Amino acid sequence: MPGASLSTAAVARKNIRRRPWRSFCLVVTVLLFSFFLYAGTVLSVSLSGGARSTADRLGADIIVVPAGYDPHIDSIILSGKPSMFYLPRDILERLRDVEGIDRMSPQTFLATLRASCCSYPLQIVGVDYESDFIVRPWLEATLGRGLEDGELIVGYRVNGEAGERLHFFGVDLPIAGRLEQTGMGFDSTVFVTRKTVTDLAKAAENIFKHPLASDGSRVSTVMVKLKPGYDSVKVAQEINRRFGDDDIFALFSKKFVNSIASSLALVSWMIRGGIGLAWLLAVIVIALLFAVTMNERKGEIGVLRAVGASRGKILALALTEALLVSFYGAALGTCLGAAAVAVVSPMVADALKLPFLVPSWTALVLLGVASVAVSVLTGVMSALFSARRASRADIYDALRGN
Image (cartoon, rainbow, N blue to C red):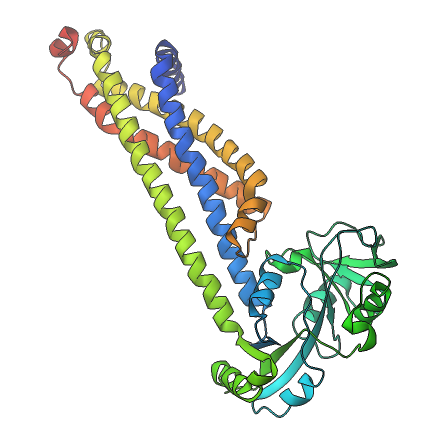
C-alpha cells in the first residue's frame, strides 16, 4: 500500500541517518562505480562514433601523398594539425595512366600562423569543387549551394559564425557556413576553393616564400576513387611501384581506417576492463558493508519481528535502505561523470590521437539514466544476500544478537 511504502522509506532513511559513516562509505562506493561507468561508456561511445564518422567521411579508396608524409595526412585527418607539403606538378597526369582509377580529387594544404597576420593557426584545405567527392557533399548539405572563390566554410570547432570574417595573411574572408561535427581533424579545418588557397599563398609572400605563390597548380594530396571491381591494395602498390622513386606514395584508406579500428579495440578493451573491475570492487565492498550493518542490527530486527513485522517487511526495509543509498551515490556519481566528460573529453581526444565524436545530448541523457539504473541495481543486488539472511533469522536468535 502507498502508506506502507512511505513508512518503509521513512524508516529506511532514519536508519541511514543513524549510521552516517557506514552510509557514507556505501554512497561513495556506488558514486565511484557510477562515475567510471558513465565516463567510461561515454568515452567508448565517442571513440566508436569517431571511427564510424571517419569510415563514412573518408570516401576515397586511395590517398596519394608525397613519400614520407603519410603520418602528416594521418595528423590532418585525425587532429587537424596544420601542415604543408606538395606533390610533383604533373601528379594528376601521371595518375591518369594508372588502370582502375575512376575519379581523382586534388586537395591543396596551407597552414596559417600564430601571428598578427592570421586569426589563429589552423589547416586550410583547398578543394577542387568540380571533381571533389569527399568534402563537396558536406558543403552542399550545409550551404545548399557550391563553394565560391573568396569565401570559406569552417569546421565545427573553428571559432566564427556565418557572415563573420576570418583574417589570414592580411586577407579577410567571409564565413559562408559551418560543417556538422565529425569527430575528426576536419572539425578544426577551414575549407576553401583551390583558387582561394593560391590567393592566400600569394598574400603570404609578404611574410615567407611559398611555392604556391608561383605555381597555383601544386596539390598536396590526391583522393582517388576506383572503378568497381578494382582492389585498392593492388592499385596502391602499382602506383608505388611506378612512382615511388619520384617521392610519391599511395596509401589505401582501408589501412588507415583499420589502424584506427585496431587502436579503438585496444582502448575499448581497456575501458571495459576498468569498468568491470570497478563493478567487481563495488559489489564486494557493498556486500561486505551491508553484511556488517545487518549483523549490527540483529537486535533491532529481532524486536521488529517480535512486535509483528513479517519477514517480507524486514526484507523490504533492508532493500529500501540499499535502494536509497545506491540512488544517492549513483545520481551524484553520474553527474560528476558528466562534468568530467565535459571538461576532459577534448584533452582525451588529443592524447589518444583518435577520432572522437561526443554523442548527442539525448544520447548523453539516456546514457546517464542507464548508468543510474545499473548502479542502483548493482547496489540492491549486492545487498540482497545479507537482507534475505537478516529477514529469515529466528526471532529468539535475533533478540540475543546471534
